[in-house]
Image (tube, rainbow, N blue to C red; front, side, top):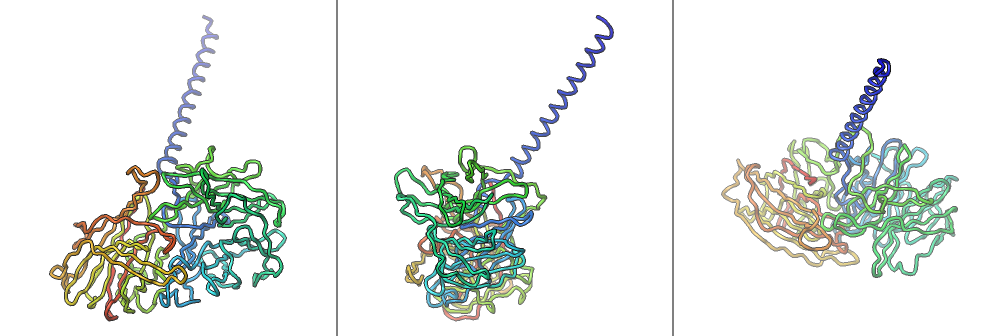
Length: 561
């Protein structure tokens, strides 16, 4: 063979080999990156496996802000933020208390399942705005409009006006402002947001004949000159499901055309709907929609939003909610909305909410530094009327919360402990009975009047009790209480639903745990609390006020598997 030809063939072969090796290296690097995204940092749906219903989400710069419904919990209307749609953290609340009625103070009725609902969040001309209407009748149900320079607050009241159900605040490009509410109703607001402009009420569409349920959860956006109103549709007909629909128009006053943009069950649970869409700085769009998941409450899922023929179609290429999503690249550290707490700060963390308005003089983080002190301040006969029960969400798939509590200063008749708190509650309750201290695992239940949410009946069943009198002394008066929660999809043959089980433990040293009572089936009941399960820290008096407990720590763990 000619030497030059041989040399050329050798060089060509070498170049092809180098290209092949480079290609293999790139493929390997790509596979590693993909594995890193999918295996370590992927967003697993549910994006927030906790009770975060009725979301509204906006983006300002590189930051996403989310507001959710928390009803009778205070402070209310939590603001959460994220830069990557994976790591969320509560950074503020729109209000500390609601004071329109003694119901919010657990007097003359309650506000269970009422209070703040479906807040609309907007950013306009350098300010944040929030519109919310408590789910109440009369003056208590008047709509609030708040504004703030920063999403973290402080928020101030701009105005109050008539009630608007599940509404969306909308600032148009021409400076006019609207509120869209109910099932396709709209009114224009005055430029200063002080009230509605009378005579502007309009039905902008009529629902389909088979949509016998309400269309709710209005979220209005404008995209490329068109108006898009997203809503949840309930269709009670064979073969039809809960779904997210979109109404689209060239003019805000209509006419509107309609498209179903999501009809998908997910993860062994029912069909999901209600939420909104939001875009990134790069122009990608996402849907954030909630799903009912039994005892844990209403959870948030993240999905692609693809503009097809001018419609924001949600879900993957098959229109289904995906199992995982790739997070945005942001460098944001890992954050969470449920957290541990050692109570070393003089301020209560944003991750806590009180059941109804707190009595501020009856709790303290400073009287015994490093402890949360809960004082009895009102004589009641049930946990459901006890002020100053402090709550955090439970999370799926499984989670565990425990407290270390000093019970030395409890008085006769006092009850304190840790609960899986809801309208049906499983609790670990320390009871001071004369000179005795008893630990009970008990099941509690409340019945409420439909109109005023007055407590009409309570039930308490002791499953197991344990005498602590000889084990706890003035020198050794601490006890540890723990609740493990399991919200994984059920594997017992039911078509849909979760395990929704709570298991209860106590310890005398914080290391060795003893199970007490039986597994408790947690539930979600929309007629009473309308809320997912919460960890509840409580202390109340049944005979005379003046006792208290000191809680040293709240330890929390979540298992993602």
